[in-house]
Image 1 (cartoon, one colour):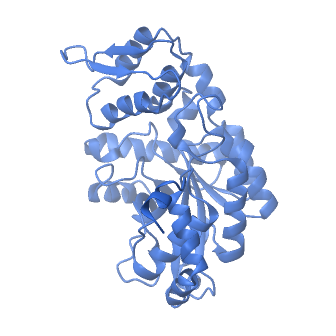
Image 2: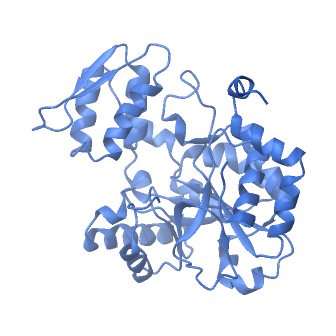
Length: 356
């Protein structure tokens, strides 16, 4: 294919995945992986429509629109043996399964998990696990990434100059495109992730002031996240609840004592709320540096027997070095079509990695 024509394809990863299927390469990969017992853990966040007009929050947190999510779940139902969180306690039994294994998980506790995803899961009879940051339910508020996006999507300003910290002489310059706010939002997101914002609340207050956008964070947070009653309903329907920390902080950035508190407090609150044991945790952010070997030790001390990371990959249940407190997942994004999801899973299972 000429390079110019390839560049014109809007979703190149999906095109490559479909090409892999059309040439028979995907079926070959799946045959090669058939002898190994692999567990694919899919990570979703929000199920909603993206776009400046469709949603006022941070677009990359949207994993799929409802119709796309339904297509994903049909693929998972048809091509995998779906396992529940409790099933992982008996990895030896799962190793005898005839199909590749898959598990569906959600992080952060967004309300659309209940309102949009749950009806699809129930219709297709697919169990899922929901990892909840208990602080978002106890004290509803917008998380910083959604707060930033909300302000920058609402502002009429075209340039903002916001101090990173009270004593920082180098302000953050934010140019706001009137049509596409993506670059402006990512400018601020990167500053947060790089540790350039020392006081989250103070920075957000300055951002609101410069943008001239008032944010009722508690009211918006109450609408954006699930409630305790939603969690009880999920458990009553046979789904599982896990911890995502208390305040959704990068655990490895904390000393031991606050790490212990984040892990133990979230587990205690969840068990009291849903009246069921909570044995699994998904480490907030989940990438290297957000958790550490010490985090895994503290998670075990807090009573967790399973831990889920954001490290890309699958888990071989018959591998001697399988680490139940450091399981890998495939993070699902809005560009992931069913063909791409299938190809990513097959590449990881057969080749140990994916170039898609």
